[in-house]
Length: 369
Ligand code: PLP
Image 1 (spheres, protein in one colour):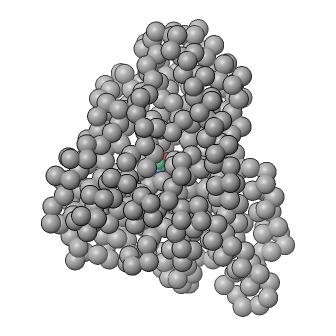
Image 2: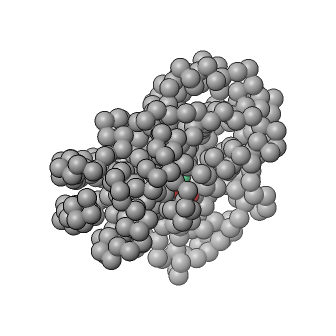
Image 3: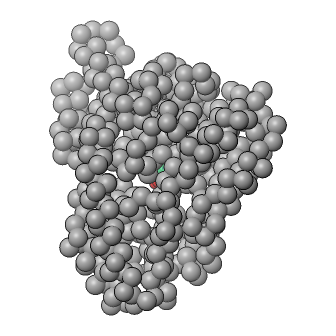
């Protein structure tokens, strides 16, 4: 099968896998223990933390290992609002955020938090004037993703942070689809908290991190054995942490090569798709990453195309929502009707994707257009 669903998850890079394996079988010791083997394991965990910090340009002490982006998002949003109630009870986010953000915000609304869900235009962009005018004296937090998982649209986090700083508001950024695709520098972008998941960058599933700036206070989601400076209790999952570190290492050292590869594939498939009249590329001419393409194919039953496809793994929305019949909340926020959204396909590449594979997709689409 041809795999064109890398925004959903990626395969584990063999180098990452090899780095992890000794920590299942040989170096299995509990990193919180005080004998020599355990200390060696702890040292490796701290090495991974340094690598994670480097990829986003923060201090290693500002990284907490979690089970991935969903947990990090829950920890950032719930933990911040619980610990900083004196700063206000209002969050600003956007209608095209991942469900992990939207559902956490909905939960917080049941606890008395006010949430503003910003609209986007047909290209998926936020109106920064609208963002600024949504701020009130109770606004404590702005939560906007860097790269949208369904469309590849990049939000201008630098400008968003500049607005937030004027009003002394904390910025949380879901960078799950950005790491390894674009440079993510939290100092440069002015981001206070950020999350990611290793499995989006050829690392293992079930691991990621939350970055939060030194001065920020969060209440933890999990209480227990005090690991991670009391921020995330539970025995260290060393193999996954090691895999996360190696995946970040590869993502940062291969960033330029991978970007070049994606751009080449993007330009070549876009040129071909442009010859098919019934295809519209969503948010084509906006600031975007090149590894995600969402397209509307007029008249196509995208669910059927995906589910019956014997050659290609491709998505008709984000994996978390593709089993739900109603159209993608992202596309709907961009102005697509349920029917139009049901005609949309998302393809997403990684470093292993080839032009030949994309040609097979093109031939399939040519047959149905
Ligand atoms: N945020 C974004 C933008 C994502 O694409 C995803 C995964 O699809 C998540 C959050 C959740 O990541 P995980 O399922 O690894 O917790």
